[in-house]
Length: 115
Image 1 (cartoon, rainbow, N blue to C red):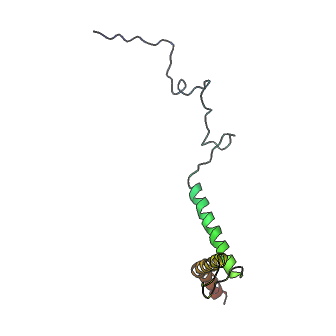
Image 2: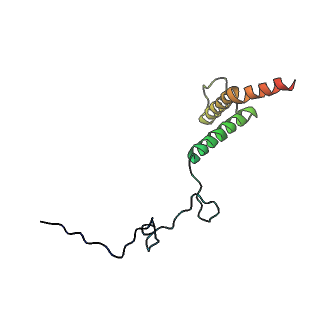
Image 3: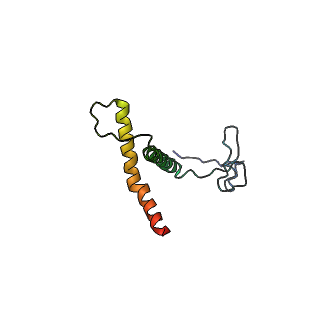
């Protein structure tokens, strides 16, 4: 048994022209490295991490703000307290803890440097 290989006469493989030519079902090429075009796509590395970090900082700032400005207050005892009172207590406790370890030291450093 012998195999016969016929040549293909009308196909020219010069670079990637044949493989990347636009067709009916082909996607348009994305110009990732050419910011001057309309199809420029920015890299998406770290966007999720950045959004998560911004979310955490926003929640922490809200907790500190609620506790520092007196919107929520810690209770002496939780006996007989309702669900909303307990929620306010733990929110104030979390805000004060965050402020104790983040904002208060920074404010202390800034006050020392003023004098």
